[in-house]
Image (cartoon, rainbow, N blue to C red; front, side, top):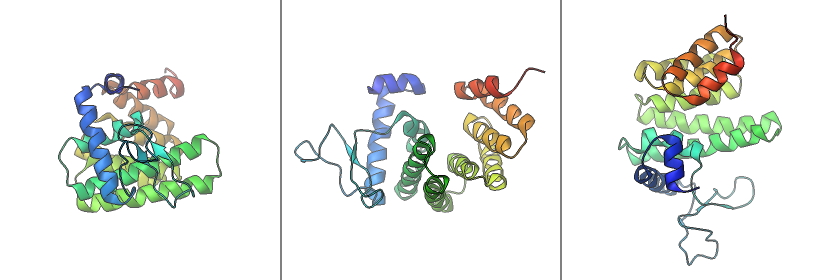
Length: 215
């Protein structure tokens, strides 16, 4: 998928995407998630800026040509505000584990295996929050991880904190909706999806239509 195509899906410019990709690569390299970013001369090279998945996790080293659209949508709020690289590195590693966890969940793997990945993401997001306690995106992403492992109260607290910090951002509302639904509060979930939908999140609109019958 080209930068321009991804940019269109995320509502930003292709130059912004290029900056986010470069930041993502630098952050992963600094965090120790990868040992190097291969060049075209590297025998493992599979494309411009290809990224090996961290060795020692899963037993194999594979390559990713670039962050996914989901990664970029999560990374952009942090990548473009000039946060400290140490916080960025922790955040990038947290996003990597979150993606692995969601892929694990989608594949129907054992819940315990997926929970391990979510917990790893939580650990990295927590460290990043320690460095940047006023980052709404960090609280929002940790909220989602907590919800995925059924720790709904912690998730609700994190998403509510993210909303306090950035009340106009749709992501914390969408993630809090997931928590509320899991915690048995469908009306509150529908209210959160409605807010996220009105703030410009089309996936929240879809979730609202699917889960919230008209009164």
